[in-house]
Length: 541
Image (cartoon, rainbow, N blue to C red; front, side, top):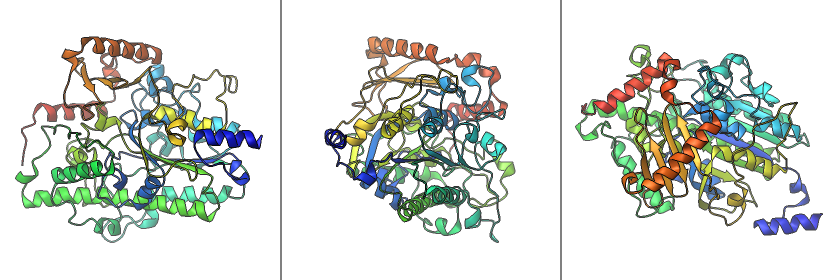
């Protein structure tokens, strides 16, 4: 048997593990919230992220890894290996009255925790959940043994509501800061299972760097003055670093600037200072997130858990277009300076324009800026160091990847239920061998509040609500979606659109026009504000 395993490991291209390492691996899945493609040093950023950069330099980065463009639908797919509609979270964490849009994970879509727990794993989660509703599908009901926060209200709302104590200026104290609190409980759980012979699965779901912009003053201080040159300069600098790193081809062009992005040079001095402060706080949030991962790595090392652990890091969607001053009564509820617990501020699409470098658009949209975000995988002696691959992975691939790594079979029957069939593919060939990308002739598909997309091979088809007009991009030569070639390729448009509608029917997707009346008022307000900005782009300081 040992000889068979040795031959298998040689075929897969990594060193045969020691007897101690042949036990099932630990798996850690770390999810950031609203982190853009270029917000890590390893993806071109000026933000200090040495711990994630270390994982990237000692492991693998993917150039193309996809999500579902917004929070809850991505989390549903990530946890189950299903497209979000099949899992019941087709719109958001709101119940729109249809099975595909109930707003929480259905029973037929098994979570990674449920499957791994049945196969001898300790299952742990700390942080944001956001895929439960009506008192069902809470983490402790879906396979997790150790859970923080174990509070139904926090799980249903999406994020732990840490308020805690503040200093004299209104900044949170370190022990009350959400990133620290989430990480602290994860480390406590790791201590709790360190002497257990069972492997563990940890789903560590951070709330950073999602708005409101709140950070610790010592972290903000590191970035004072760093963003005084504005988003266009930061974007250009990140773009150049991405080419140097080999993340994008030297001939890649930056995506076209949105018309409603403010002209930095026409802002007053005071306005520039206010905008720069927003990005200083955002950078501090990313910095603290990275610090927490350094603490996690040290804890694993101290506990003797590190060498047999796969760590995967990703984001739930691209950086957002939300402007809280204009949306959700932000100007009225904003009671403190940016960075403090009283502030209700976001980086807005102006800075997200830099965060999503080199790609087009933002969270909630199906252009690359909304759905393509960083992916880092690290596993000592298994994943080759400093590898950058195309990947073309998707969050639906993580469940089958983990099952393949753990050597477990996805059940045909689970507690009397017939589980939904997994639609993702194992990424192990990309992680462990010379394979550059997953072979996926059936393609990938997206739908979010009427925004639609299909990708098969190099071709990507897109339409943005309320338009039904298809755009077509050749991502092989135009990864930043500059030139719409739909009018020159009617056969490709037909092929991809037919594939999209087959997928939509299989997954219970409903034309968004039929769902608009069911949409919550707050989300309608948000979409209306976005459309008004697009329709009236002339506003400049």
